[in-house]
Length: 488
Image (cartoon, rainbow, N blue to C red; front, top):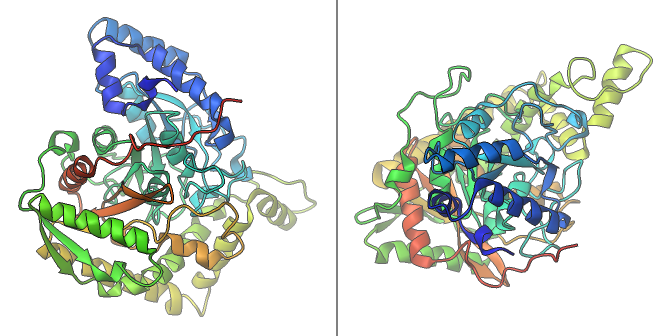
């Protein structure tokens, strides 16, 4: 593997600015790497954006790059619309859909000069925790191809971890950026809900979904966030808060920072080696001048059931549009009802069908108040827990996952056990908080992630804390002994 691919995205941009390489050369390296490691199945569609790279070549030759990420190859989760390049959502339902427009985040990345090399694999409609629920096959973890990369943004995580691209965008509804980032040993940020536009992103659960960056370093994530965190008047959930200016703040340190540790997140089911690594990260914060204290999040124990009521209800509503007539796959049938039934049965996979059925049930007459209405009330309590906690602390530290990446097929027959993979991440989506996962150790050669949570719209403090920890433990993109599949 070329050493240039081992750099993070910011370093690659700096090398371009110094004239040490060109965007076209970087693109060639990435395309070669994608082909050499194609058995990972990280991509659904690979593009060859030669014209983008050549335009960036000319900008650098003229000394006028558009941004620090100009000419840097990245990938997009195949849930994010790209004009002229198919967007499948990992589903047969949209297998041949070619959007006539760019999502807002796609447009912003193009405006910054980033080169989009393709669309990454995912659990169908972002519904899954292992990237095994894709109509285009399972993604493999670059650290151990017999194991899952996490989900639903597993393709983005694997592409970054395998050095196929320098960064990627994912989406996070209940942990779908942070959980695969932890399992693949990279950095993944879920921004505050409303920080990044969702326009042009295929919807799963609209009150929970959020686009975010995935990369090999915290400063890369900060640089990507600064590009995509722009108010979008075409998205009614997009907030007009001041931009995060995360990259400029990322090196400011943690002296005097108040770090909270919720014991509710260190409960039964957490692997001992993960608990040890996360508690060591907490101790490292203290040694760097932060003040560590316990915080109470008493309604965390209800978050899992609350989340799966709300997300399935919203999925049932959002996916109703795919009826075989207006959108998506259309089956041959003799009448209208049969067209609906056959199109949805053929177009949706088992996990999506399961969630639609659950969501339709909790929204049905006689059950709405008992399930959906009550879940909304508990969601408010979860948010209030965090509001009280952030009166006393600036950042909260938890595990990202209860265990390291598990073997492919190990949990597909037990949906509840699969859902528990997100037990430490989904309350963050219920509350709308920003959260970041970064590598903090290994267990049996597999990465361990630590999760940091911050106040609403304070990604700058959150990423500064993450960067300080990353620098102190020096574990992540340069971790030794990362096995890669051989070139075919």
